[in-house]
Length: 372
Image (tube, rainbow, N blue to C red):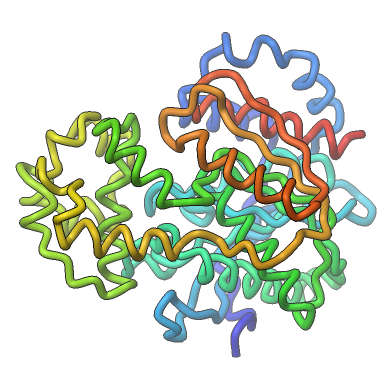
């Protein structure tokens, strides 16, 4: 049964200082980036508390509709009293070792440390389902897997902690999580039977229009973040494209893609291995409208756009880096214009820095919103 809690995987206690230092080190955030936000950090530290992380597994489906056991983490504040609410996070999963159950000190848990239950699924291809390729940009499946995780978390909390999860959620996601949380917001609104009301949506740095991002790669032949090979490999598997990788990859990537592109290697490490110039690891004629492999991929990527068939009832808060070299800012503007056209309640903020350090002000803005 989808959404059914399966098993408790682990219980671990998390403190703020250790988690903060881990995240700063993992994402190589420089003190210069943090300095302008000193006051916000101090305000957060005054409200912060320890959390208990519960790793769980549960029943859901993969992008091809097959039943699968997935995993994720439910973070519960250790402060006495009733939690302030529920934050559902769509993770910025970059590789199999970055998922919540493998790296429980995730950057996205800080907002929850001021008193919120925080739910982070691993998504398919990570955690307990890591025998599969990571399901990059499979937005419908991301939404279903995330909603199933919430159901399982509710069962677990009621069964083990005698806590009834409220039916209202705040949604939060950055980078791949930005588009993931947007898909989840749509899912909840179009499926009232799920019984979840979304009050606010915080989405930053997302590839809401993947075709726009792919065409940007086509234009620049450059990427600071070598995730495109993984996305191509993932879509070939889940969308059954039957691509001939001899016409797409070259060099070391062609020799090793079956291992490298499953998500086994952190993307920064893969970028160091294959470089930032796409022509170093992709065939020069791949980005060609006459290339059947490219056209097949482009068609499927276009279908991964999260449909514009709904008007969010929740307030939408959009963020994007002015200087984003990972996800083109055009993806953000397309979504913002769509929301303005349909009359949604939306505000936006363009952030300084590049994609990764821009996550700092994005998250601190969310925390400031929660603190009030």
